[in-house]
Length: 372
Image 1 (cartoon, rainbow, N blue to C red):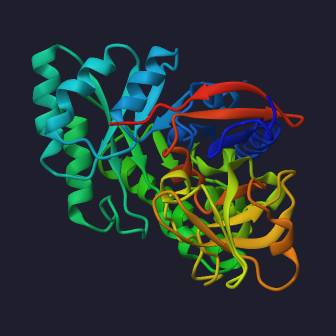
Image 2: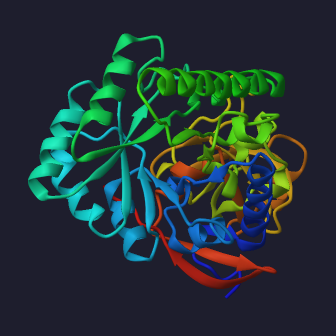
């Protein structure tokens, strides 16, 4: 099967680029002397994770318990569930922890005692990170907040909990406008976590892991002194957002959505493709850098940039305005295009599987483990 015969819309994965991206990140993290625990929420694929973890510990990060269950069932023995754990998930989490080394995280002062009680009742010992806010203000406790030390002590003192360390995510790096801004933020993330790790060691006790993670910060940071684990995820595919931000080149991007032209509008010089919000997601991308980025970059079947974007979309329709440079005449009904989505993580989660491409041919099909 080839891209000319694959039905549309379909998710297309360039495995050569995946392997190249994986090797680059592995070598980068190794030179910094840290461990790589890649975040598999980007792809939710066992096969992709095996490429990411080849040659090192095999540890991964997940964003759902469904992912944790699927990856544990496929031989991944060290897993961090990187969403703050809450009581409604304790029982399922404990069940999964019997099949692998599953670590959890919290930023709440009550959860350590609650989780410890649940673990004690089930006769297990669980590993728990303290989630730190390094400026993203989504989850985590700020190091200057007195609750930070209190939570760490509660974990350390609990009979059925192991204090795994501290963990943060610089998600606000995606709002940076320049590479220099990303570098400054990466240094802040690193330095804040290193300092807080030292504070905890002096005030509470051992801090086994100091973990940071985001693709923009890891690809730009100049050293990782004080950090011993990183958890980037998007680097394995990259996307239009990362290319605009400067984290990668366009030809590093491994994931596209194959689409067909289904309608032409000569008056408005636009075409409609059969990839809409469900196939691409509605992430607007790096609007702080490029207000006209739309919902994805349009490529031809060979992957060449047509300098077009998906400007509008509904559930199953994507609108591409072609302008006056002759492209409209080339895009007949049935013409196949590829869309490089703004955010590969969200796009991948819309689909059931990858169509794996190598040397222009579809060579495999890899399942995507969605759900919660």
